[in-house]
Amino acid sequence: MVDKKAQNQKSLEMAIQTLTQVAASPTTPKNIKKNLTDLITNLKSGQDPVSIRAANAISQIDDVTQDPNLPSYVRVTLWQAVSTLESIRD
Image (cartoon, rainbow, N blue to C red; front, side, top):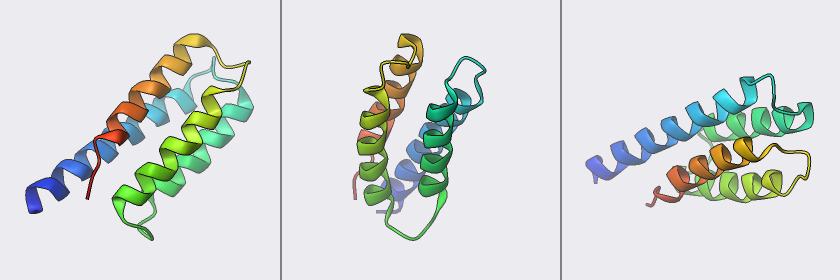
């Protein structure tokens, strides 16, 4: 149980790091940066269990990737974050 919790926390931190890099990139559109900043804040909050925060983040990232102004390489990076978040299970 403790091992799974540590693994989930590590996956969450990796996803947050990836999202932070995308949000800090000068090539990311401002509206996407705002959405990602809000998303990172929600992931870092401890109000909900990790799995619920991850599921909510996946849904929000899916919405962000539908934006036609999003560069394709940013979209691929966001999908990598989704893949990391999908590994989080309770």
